[in-house]
Length: 252
Image (cartoon, rainbow, N blue to C red; front, side, top):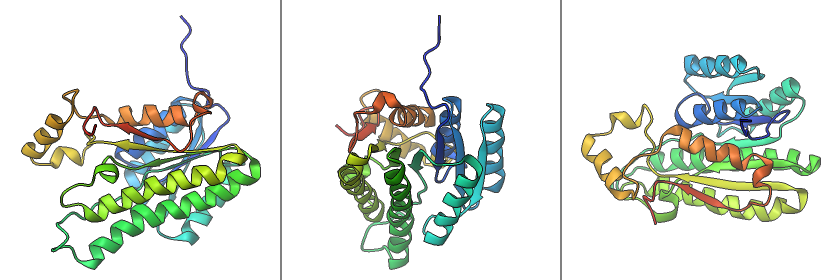
């Protein structure tokens, strides 16, 4: 039987926060489906090199760049490096993010500002640069990784929920701006995902998250990356402005 794979051959992708967790899974999945992949990272140097090696083992080109996603200068340099290496960029996946949790009456301005800067301003910076390139080449796929907490809000996460809600609004507005240029802009909204970081969460919090789902399980990073790769393919060419929940029914 012939295996049906997504047609990302000859496509070039850039994934922010691609060294660990969901971002690493997305980068590897895009490579498995045929794309050359560039990732950025901030502090996980060893992990980023491991992702690069895995992409190259799949027979694809890989670029790794240390870059602060809140810096426009870093972003411009990264796009230039990727274009030098690949010739062009076809796909942007914005995934880099942080949390600084706390109820709002205890939250300091630094925790608010950092989360908004990385999770919202960083998306603005990369979406803006990608929009410029994609508009001119009249082709592109943008996928922003948001969260169900940007849809429903989450206790102790006013900063994170506000940033993720902003990503959703950004996605919808940008889809309208870029549609006439044959550019698809979508967002994927995971629920809780079982990553190395999640494993350190107290068991009672994990149980609560599982109990919220209707499928009785947490997502794996691959559950997210499979949907991202689909949205980056021509099989999703008539989907734009969509917010796709991948949460096992955690928020219905």
